[in-house]
Image 1 (cartoon, rainbow, N blue to C red):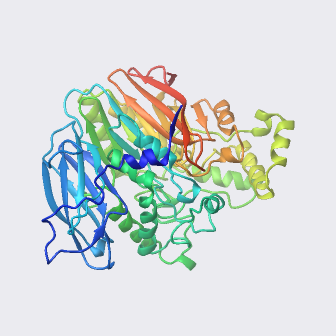
Image 2 (cartoon, rainbow, N blue to C red):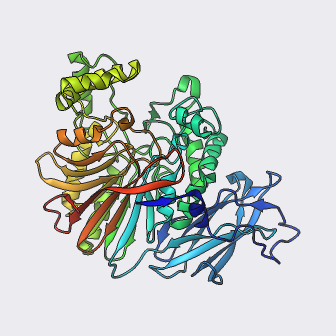
Image 3 (cartoon, helix red, strand yellow):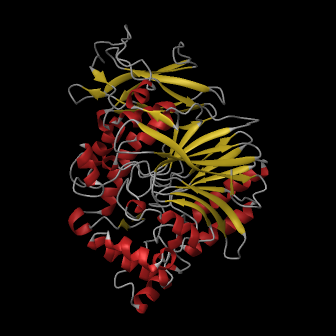
Length: 550
């Protein structure tokens, strides 16, 4: 195991902060500025990437003129330079779409303020062309700021090789200081800003700013380009095309206005390209080509087409209540991707297969596997289960009793995942077959690590799935230790499940195999910390055998 402290993570940000660059400021643009939120890169291409920063302006008003520079070494002379304005109307954030670089190369970049102050130095790798022997991607999600320290990002920043980071959402959370994770936040003096649940553009900007101010978050962004998509909490819990579980129009106003504010803040604060499809900002699905080795297709499953989640509204022990929920769940018109996005995905996968690429990756927010809720009294034994229940608070005992009743009646573990939309999932598996692809699905959202074999309704292997655990967000394992083992025991598709630990998944592709390492940090409550690979699984090129222990 490796021990990493805060000092080591900060060192990875580079040594450029505070260095003067004489001769840049002019009378018209001179404005004191700092780079308190670091730098970031994202959406890499074969010839460039998106570069991002935010200028902290002393007077808090007016635009700030910045310079950007790209070099082929951390201390090398710039190969590309230019000017960009950090506009007050965009919360003083600035993004540059750099092009004209060589494929498959590491580049370093930084920004400079008008008064000569220089940002930290960041690093990204352009997408390769031609022959590729190895690709290493970190997969992350679910980083509740009050939920703990971002130790997983400190570990990620220290990796000797990292081609890109795939972030599958829940980069921020909407809750206030008395909400989800607040007990941990109070212990760590890490409560959310603003302290109330966020609703307005200013609220969402402040929450993004708080996360970007974290030194471990900055270190990870400085280490590699991020390829991002939102999940639900970037707006509100359990979002769908027409609303969210955690949005009440009667007290919180119009859903469309809240969503628009959240999306504006997201595009301001994240290193992501604007969609050019003319389908609205929600249509952020896009693909990335890693030479002759792999295609990564990033999909959107929240705001573009998702039907409202089905949910229990009454007693889960009542047969009529269960029958109503299961009937609604089985409706064939319920969507996650929508027809337009699914056609795009099928075409993207088919094009990758025709090009002879061995791997197709699907960056998707929620778990795709069929996961039946575990019958814990049966799996644990009555005595052990009773002892476990006795240790829980009354609200948790009531919640567990209701959940187990629903599981016994046929409800899945999570109705917000693809398990809440089985006809849509089967349509997706049919798209995989038509494209000639058996992809690797990447999933976040669940705050648990997964390795799953995905089967269609006919029992045929459709895909492999690797789900990353949370960076910090609490998991069910905190209440029921060992829950992941019981889930794996109860489900054919679940090869591995860890509901206890925090971390990320490191995926390495070669022409012959894909290896997923589920990386965990020993704590999110303190530094230093230890890192451990808690499971390592492999998918071979023929994919016929499914997931194997590596």
